[in-house]
Length: 200
Image (cartoon, rainbow, N blue to C red; front, side, top):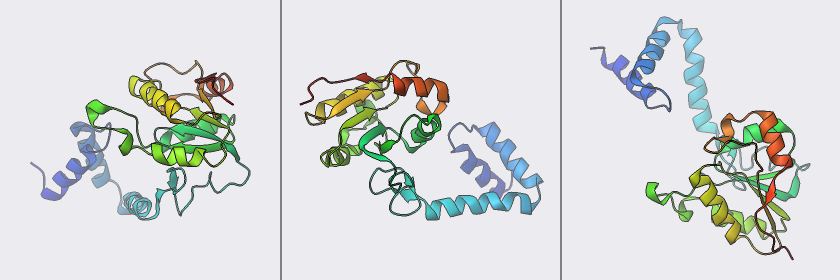
């Protein structure tokens, strides 16, 4: 129906999350309609981010270099680690300005039905980090079935003497941290609850 180049663009755009065939087609036609100097910076930005951005060797957040900006910040409280599923979950937490510790990105949540097992996540690296003198681990996985299962799994693995807490109510069950507002997340951090009471 269209030239091979246009068809390829529509196909590639439709692979993006939340972009269906019709939206991909509208985006493709928009890109064809605008001046090259208005659309080429987008192409350059995509190439640039894929070449320069990787994962922090310490927490697995997005990083331009070995460490992310949070791990490289000497002002952060290294006795606190907040565990999240994806790098995108860090952004809304940082917006609350309630938390000044470090993070650990799991890279997903446990879901045996989807083939996601503990070995597929950065759980072992979290256990290693906690062994270096962490006082509290705040489990901020999404309040979904897989997020809750992951939180309980992590709480059972962490050594005695480490306080393990979960974000408090305020986050809707079945929701994602990425879409929570700052006030809701701030209250959830302030009222986080203990998951385990065996501290030494």
